[in-house]
Image (tube, rainbow, N blue to C red; front, side):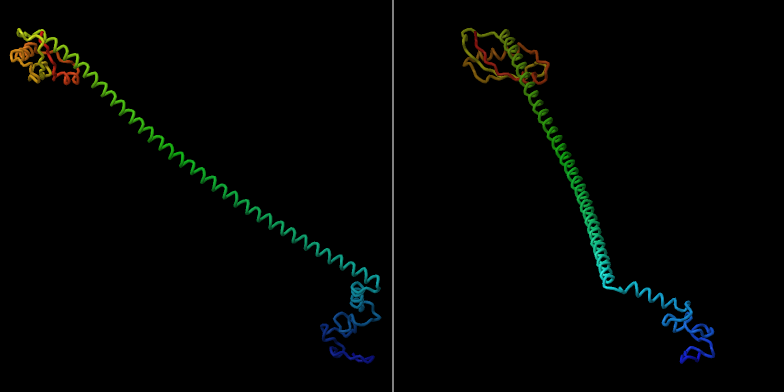
Length: 252
C-alpha cells in the first residue's frame, strides 16, 4: 500500500503476505497496526481497547484507587500467608497424627510381644513347677512306700521273733517233761544249743555251758532227743527263727 506516507513491508501488489495474502486492509486482525492505533473502523480497535481496559484494571488512575489496590494486595498477601500457615499447621497435625499412630502401633506391638513372652514364661514356669511337684510327689511316694515296707518288714520280723520265742518256750516245756534229772543235781544249771529241721527233727545239739556234772549234761541232751519232733511254726520266718535255740535248764 502506498498512500498517506505509509509503506508496509508485508504488502505486495495490494496483498498482505502476513495475513494469508488477503487484500491489504490496515488495522485488520493480524496486521502489524492492529491494536496499536485508533482507526475509524471500530472493529479494528478491539485489541487496542482490550489493552487499555487491562491497563485501567492493573494501573490505578488515582491515589485512592492506588490505596485500595495496595490494601487489596495486602489482604490477598495476608490471605495467602494465612492459607500457607493453615496448610503447614494441617500438615504438621497430619504428620504428628501419623507419628503418634506409628508410636501407638509400635507400643501395642511391643506390649503384645511382652504379654506373649510373659504368658509363655508363666506357662514354662508352671510346667517346670508341675514337673518338680510330680517328681517330688513320686519321690515322697517311693520313700513312704519304702518306709512302709521297712516298717512292715521290721514288724514281720518282730512278729516272727515273737512267734519263734513262744515256740521255743513250748520246746523247753516239752524238754522239761522228757528230762530225767539225775539225783543229787538239783539246782544245777546247764545251757545247750540245739538246731531243728523245718519238720521239727533234731539236727544238732551241743552243751554251750556245762553244769559241771557229766550225768546232768548227758541227761539234758537225751531229753532233747526224747522230746522230738517239735511243733514248728507255720510262718516261714518264725520257723526259721525257731530252728535254733540256746535255753538254760535248771535241775529240780
